[in-house]
Length: 279
Ligand code: SAM
Image (cartoon, rainbow, N blue to C red; front, side, top):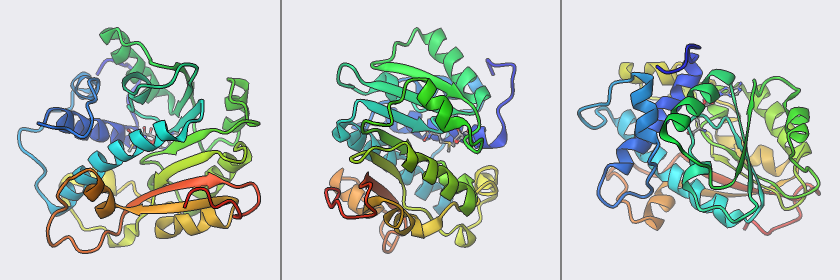
Protein backbone atom coordinates (compact mmCIF):
# COMPACT_ATOMS: atom_id res chain seq x y z
CA UNK A 1 0.00 0.00 0.00
CA UNK A 2 1.28 3.47 -0.88
CA UNK A 3 0.20 5.29 2.29
CA UNK A 4 1.96 4.64 5.59
CA UNK A 5 -1.31 5.23 7.48
CA UNK A 6 -3.33 1.98 7.33
CA UNK A 7 -6.94 2.11 6.23
CA UNK A 8 -9.47 1.22 8.92
CA UNK A 9 -11.78 -1.75 8.25
CA UNK A 10 -14.62 0.57 7.19
CA UNK A 11 -12.34 2.49 4.85
CA UNK A 12 -11.14 -0.77 3.30
CA UNK A 13 -14.72 -1.31 2.10
CA UNK A 14 -13.95 1.46 -0.43
CA UNK A 15 -11.45 -0.95 -1.99
CA UNK A 16 -14.18 -3.54 -2.47
CA UNK A 17 -16.25 -0.95 -4.33
CA UNK A 18 -13.20 -0.05 -6.45
CA UNK A 19 -12.78 -3.75 -7.21
CA UNK A 20 -16.36 -3.95 -8.51
CA UNK A 21 -15.76 -0.84 -10.66
CA UNK A 22 -12.51 -2.28 -12.00
CA UNK A 23 -14.32 -5.52 -12.86
CA UNK A 24 -17.14 -3.76 -14.71
CA UNK A 25 -14.68 -1.46 -16.52
CA UNK A 26 -12.82 -4.51 -17.84
CA UNK A 27 -15.93 -6.17 -19.31
CA UNK A 28 -17.32 -5.79 -22.83
CA UNK A 29 -19.98 -3.07 -23.08
CA UNK A 30 -19.55 -1.81 -19.51
CA UNK A 31 -22.19 0.43 -17.95
CA UNK A 32 -19.36 2.83 -17.05
CA UNK A 33 -15.62 2.99 -17.31
CA UNK A 34 -13.61 3.89 -14.25
CA UNK A 35 -10.00 4.12 -15.43
CA UNK A 36 -8.72 4.62 -11.87
CA UNK A 37 -10.43 1.77 -10.03
CA UNK A 38 -7.90 -0.96 -10.89
CA UNK A 39 -5.00 1.31 -9.88
CA UNK A 40 -6.52 1.80 -6.41
CA UNK A 41 -6.89 -1.95 -5.95
CA UNK A 42 -3.37 -2.67 -7.19
CA UNK A 43 -1.79 0.06 -5.05
CA UNK A 44 -3.56 -1.32 -1.97
CA UNK A 45 -1.94 -4.72 -2.41
CA UNK A 46 -5.36 -6.38 -2.49
CA UNK A 47 -5.17 -9.36 -4.85
CA UNK A 48 -7.23 -9.06 -8.03
CA UNK A 49 -9.69 -12.00 -8.02
CA UNK A 50 -9.10 -14.59 -10.69
CA UNK A 51 -12.74 -15.69 -10.82
CA UNK A 52 -16.12 -13.95 -10.55
CA UNK A 53 -18.24 -13.66 -7.39
CA UNK A 54 -19.10 -17.06 -5.89
CA UNK A 55 -22.00 -16.84 -3.42
CA UNK A 56 -25.47 -15.44 -4.06
CA UNK A 57 -24.68 -12.56 -1.72
CA UNK A 58 -21.44 -11.76 -3.58
CA UNK A 59 -23.19 -11.85 -6.95
CA UNK A 60 -25.95 -9.60 -5.60
CA UNK A 61 -23.48 -7.08 -4.19
CA UNK A 62 -21.54 -6.93 -7.47
CA UNK A 63 -24.73 -6.34 -9.51
CA UNK A 64 -25.85 -3.75 -6.96
CA UNK A 65 -22.47 -1.98 -7.03
CA UNK A 66 -22.42 -1.81 -10.83
CA UNK A 67 -26.00 -0.58 -11.21
CA UNK A 68 -25.71 1.94 -8.42
CA UNK A 69 -22.53 3.43 -9.89
CA UNK A 70 -24.19 4.03 -13.25
CA UNK A 71 -27.49 5.18 -11.71
CA UNK A 72 -25.74 7.76 -9.51
CA UNK A 73 -23.47 8.86 -12.40
CA UNK A 74 -26.54 9.72 -14.44
CA UNK A 75 -28.57 11.28 -11.64
CA UNK A 76 -25.66 13.41 -10.42
CA UNK A 77 -25.14 14.89 -13.87
CA UNK A 78 -28.89 15.33 -14.42
CA UNK A 79 -29.27 17.18 -11.10
CA UNK A 80 -27.73 20.27 -12.66
CA UNK A 81 -26.39 21.75 -9.42
CA UNK A 82 -22.98 23.35 -9.57
CA UNK A 83 -22.14 22.23 -6.01
CA UNK A 84 -21.67 18.49 -5.52
CA UNK A 85 -20.84 16.87 -2.18
CA UNK A 86 -19.63 13.27 -2.10
CA UNK A 87 -20.14 12.14 1.49
CA UNK A 88 -17.80 9.23 2.35
CA UNK A 89 -16.30 9.58 -1.13
CA UNK A 90 -13.89 6.70 -0.61
CA UNK A 91 -12.23 5.85 -3.93
CA UNK A 92 -15.05 7.35 -6.00
CA UNK A 93 -13.32 8.89 -9.04
CA UNK A 94 -16.36 10.78 -10.37
CA UNK A 95 -14.54 14.09 -10.01
CA UNK A 96 -12.11 12.76 -12.63
CA UNK A 97 -14.17 10.56 -14.88
CA UNK A 98 -17.52 12.36 -15.34
CA UNK A 99 -18.10 15.19 -17.78
CA UNK A 100 -19.03 17.95 -15.31
CA UNK A 101 -20.27 21.27 -16.69
CA UNK A 102 -17.75 24.11 -16.41
CA UNK A 103 -17.83 25.74 -13.01
CA UNK A 104 -18.89 22.63 -11.06
CA UNK A 105 -17.39 22.46 -7.58
CA UNK A 106 -16.98 19.03 -5.99
CA UNK A 107 -16.38 18.39 -2.31
CA UNK A 108 -15.18 14.98 -1.15
CA UNK A 109 -15.46 14.02 2.53
CA UNK A 110 -14.04 10.87 4.08
CA UNK A 111 -11.64 9.70 6.77
CA UNK A 112 -8.13 11.05 6.31
CA UNK A 113 -6.23 7.82 5.49
CA UNK A 114 -8.51 6.91 2.58
CA UNK A 115 -8.28 10.41 1.07
CA UNK A 116 -4.48 10.39 1.48
CA UNK A 117 -4.20 6.98 -0.19
CA UNK A 118 -6.53 8.08 -3.00
CA UNK A 119 -4.53 11.26 -3.63
CA UNK A 120 -1.25 9.37 -3.76
CA UNK A 121 -2.59 7.00 -6.42
CA UNK A 122 -4.19 9.81 -8.45
CA UNK A 123 -0.98 11.86 -8.28
CA UNK A 124 1.07 8.87 -9.44
CA UNK A 125 -1.30 8.55 -12.41
CA UNK A 126 -1.09 12.29 -13.12
CA UNK A 127 -4.89 12.51 -12.96
CA UNK A 128 -6.63 15.88 -13.34
CA UNK A 129 -10.15 16.48 -11.97
CA UNK A 130 -12.84 17.55 -14.46
CA UNK A 131 -14.29 20.04 -11.96
CA UNK A 132 -12.92 22.07 -9.07
CA UNK A 133 -12.27 19.45 -6.38
CA UNK A 134 -11.86 20.04 -2.64
CA UNK A 135 -11.15 17.22 -0.22
CA UNK A 136 -12.17 17.42 3.43
CA UNK A 137 -10.60 14.72 5.60
CA UNK A 138 -12.52 14.00 8.78
CA UNK A 139 -15.11 11.92 10.56
CA UNK A 140 -18.70 12.48 9.45
CA UNK A 141 -19.77 11.61 12.99
CA UNK A 142 -17.94 14.71 14.19
CA UNK A 143 -20.63 17.43 14.39
CA UNK A 144 -18.11 19.98 13.13
CA UNK A 145 -18.07 18.78 9.50
CA UNK A 146 -20.91 21.07 8.26
CA UNK A 147 -19.04 24.14 9.51
CA UNK A 148 -15.83 22.92 7.87
CA UNK A 149 -17.65 22.27 4.59
CA UNK A 150 -19.08 25.80 4.50
CA UNK A 151 -15.66 27.17 5.42
CA UNK A 152 -14.24 25.18 2.48
CA UNK A 153 -16.63 26.98 0.13
CA UNK A 154 -20.04 25.23 0.06
CA UNK A 155 -22.79 27.85 -0.25
CA UNK A 156 -25.81 26.58 1.74
CA UNK A 157 -27.92 29.32 0.18
CA UNK A 158 -27.80 27.63 -3.22
CA UNK A 159 -28.91 24.11 -4.25
CA UNK A 160 -26.43 21.29 -3.72
CA UNK A 161 -26.48 17.72 -4.97
CA UNK A 162 -25.38 15.29 -2.28
CA UNK A 163 -24.31 11.68 -2.72
CA UNK A 164 -24.19 9.29 0.24
CA UNK A 165 -23.18 6.09 -1.58
CA UNK A 166 -22.42 3.02 0.47
CA UNK A 167 -22.35 5.00 3.72
CA UNK A 168 -25.47 4.79 5.88
CA UNK A 169 -25.38 1.00 6.23
CA UNK A 170 -22.16 1.43 8.27
CA UNK A 171 -23.89 3.79 10.73
CA UNK A 172 -26.46 3.22 13.48
CA UNK A 173 -29.96 4.63 13.01
CA UNK A 174 -29.18 7.56 15.32
CA UNK A 175 -25.92 8.32 13.54
CA UNK A 176 -27.62 8.16 10.12
CA UNK A 177 -30.45 10.42 11.29
CA UNK A 178 -27.91 12.90 12.71
CA UNK A 179 -25.95 12.95 9.46
CA UNK A 180 -29.05 13.43 7.29
CA UNK A 181 -30.30 16.16 9.62
CA UNK A 182 -26.99 18.00 9.11
CA UNK A 183 -27.30 17.53 5.32
CA UNK A 184 -30.81 19.02 5.52
CA UNK A 185 -29.62 22.11 7.35
CA UNK A 186 -27.12 22.81 4.54
CA UNK A 187 -29.61 22.13 1.73
CA UNK A 188 -31.37 25.02 0.02
CA UNK A 189 -34.77 24.18 -1.53
CA UNK A 190 -34.23 22.22 -4.74
CA UNK A 191 -31.11 20.48 -3.42
CA UNK A 192 -30.94 16.78 -4.22
CA UNK A 193 -29.76 13.82 -2.18
CA UNK A 194 -28.92 10.42 -3.65
CA UNK A 195 -28.53 7.36 -1.46
CA UNK A 196 -29.47 3.71 -1.12
CA UNK A 197 -32.93 2.56 -0.12
CA UNK A 198 -31.48 0.84 2.93
CA UNK A 199 -31.69 -2.82 3.82
CA UNK A 200 -32.69 -4.95 6.77
CA UNK A 201 -29.23 -6.07 7.84
CA UNK A 202 -30.63 -8.60 10.31
CA UNK A 203 -31.67 -10.81 7.39
CA UNK A 204 -28.40 -10.64 5.42
CA UNK A 205 -27.34 -14.09 4.17
CA UNK A 206 -24.01 -15.27 5.56
CA UNK A 207 -20.89 -15.54 3.42
CA UNK A 208 -17.61 -15.86 5.38
CA UNK A 209 -15.73 -14.42 2.38
CA UNK A 210 -17.68 -11.17 2.82
CA UNK A 211 -17.69 -10.99 6.62
CA UNK A 212 -15.08 -8.18 6.48
CA UNK A 213 -17.88 -6.08 4.94
CA UNK A 214 -21.15 -7.41 6.34
CA UNK A 215 -19.87 -7.60 9.94
CA UNK A 216 -19.49 -3.80 9.77
CA UNK A 217 -23.09 -3.21 8.70
CA UNK A 218 -25.15 -1.46 11.37
CA UNK A 219 -28.16 -0.82 9.18
CA UNK A 220 -28.52 2.97 9.21
CA UNK A 221 -32.19 3.88 8.83
CA UNK A 222 -32.85 0.55 7.12
CA UNK A 223 -35.61 0.01 4.55
CA UNK A 224 -37.52 3.02 5.90
CA UNK A 225 -34.91 5.61 4.93
CA UNK A 226 -37.21 7.23 2.35
CA UNK A 227 -40.00 7.55 4.92
CA UNK A 228 -37.62 9.30 7.32
CA UNK A 229 -36.58 11.72 4.57
CA UNK A 230 -40.20 12.42 3.57
CA UNK A 231 -40.89 13.36 7.18
CA UNK A 232 -37.84 15.64 7.38
CA UNK A 233 -38.18 18.17 4.58
CA UNK A 234 -37.41 16.00 1.57
CA UNK A 235 -39.58 14.62 -1.19
CA UNK A 236 -38.35 11.18 -2.23
CA UNK A 237 -38.55 8.98 -5.29
CA UNK A 238 -37.60 5.34 -4.90
CA UNK A 239 -36.24 3.26 -7.80
CA UNK A 240 -35.88 -0.46 -7.14
CA UNK A 241 -32.85 -2.38 -8.36
CA UNK A 242 -34.74 -4.45 -10.93
CA UNK A 243 -36.15 -1.24 -12.45
CA UNK A 244 -32.61 0.17 -12.74
CA UNK A 245 -31.42 -3.10 -14.30
CA UNK A 246 -34.24 -2.88 -16.89
CA UNK A 247 -33.41 0.75 -17.74
CA UNK A 248 -29.78 -0.15 -18.44
CA UNK A 249 -30.62 -3.42 -20.22
CA UNK A 250 -28.92 -5.65 -17.67
CA UNK A 251 -30.58 -8.99 -17.06
CA UNK A 252 -31.63 -9.31 -13.45
CA UNK A 253 -30.71 -12.72 -12.02
CA UNK A 254 -33.70 -15.03 -12.59
CA UNK A 255 -35.37 -16.24 -9.42
CA UNK A 256 -34.14 -13.23 -7.44
CA UNK A 257 -37.74 -12.31 -6.63
CA UNK A 258 -38.89 -8.73 -6.13
CA UNK A 259 -36.08 -6.25 -5.41
CA UNK A 260 -35.62 -5.35 -1.78
CA UNK A 261 -32.86 -2.87 -2.56
CA UNK A 262 -32.77 0.24 -4.70
CA UNK A 263 -31.98 3.91 -4.69
CA UNK A 264 -33.52 7.11 -3.38
CA UNK A 265 -33.44 10.47 -5.05
CA UNK A 266 -34.72 13.14 -2.68
CA UNK A 267 -35.47 16.79 -3.40
CA UNK A 268 -35.28 19.31 -0.59
CA UNK A 269 -38.58 21.08 -0.18
CA UNK A 270 -37.84 23.23 2.82
CA UNK A 271 -41.53 22.90 3.71
CA UNK A 272 -41.80 19.29 4.85
CA UNK A 273 -42.91 17.67 1.65
CA UNK A 274 -45.05 19.95 -0.51
CA UNK A 275 -42.66 20.18 -3.54
CA UNK A 276 -43.46 17.25 -5.84
CA UNK A 277 -40.73 17.82 -8.46
CA UNK A 278 -38.96 14.51 -7.69
CA UNK A 279 -42.00 12.43 -8.67
N1 SAM B 1 -18.87 6.24 -1.51
C1 SAM B 1 -17.71 5.49 -1.92
C2 SAM B 1 -18.04 4.61 -3.09
O1 SAM B 1 -19.20 4.21 -3.25
O2 SAM B 1 -17.12 4.29 -3.85
C3 SAM B 1 -17.13 4.68 -0.77
C4 SAM B 1 -18.08 3.68 -0.17
S1 SAM B 1 -17.27 2.62 1.00
C5 SAM B 1 -18.37 1.26 0.96
C6 SAM B 1 -17.66 3.37 2.58
C7 SAM B 1 -16.86 4.63 2.85
O3 SAM B 1 -17.43 5.26 4.00
C8 SAM B 1 -15.38 4.41 3.15
O4 SAM B 1 -14.60 5.19 2.28
C9 SAM B 1 -15.25 4.89 4.60
O5 SAM B 1 -13.99 5.44 4.90
C10 SAM B 1 -16.38 5.89 4.70
N2 SAM B 1 -16.84 6.14 6.06
C11 SAM B 1 -17.45 5.27 6.89
N3 SAM B 1 -17.72 5.87 8.07
C12 SAM B 1 -17.27 7.14 7.97
C13 SAM B 1 -17.26 8.24 8.86
N4 SAM B 1 -17.75 8.13 10.11
N5 SAM B 1 -16.73 9.40 8.43
C14 SAM B 1 -16.24 9.52 7.18
N6 SAM B 1 -16.23 8.50 6.29
C15 SAM B 1 -16.73 7.33 6.68
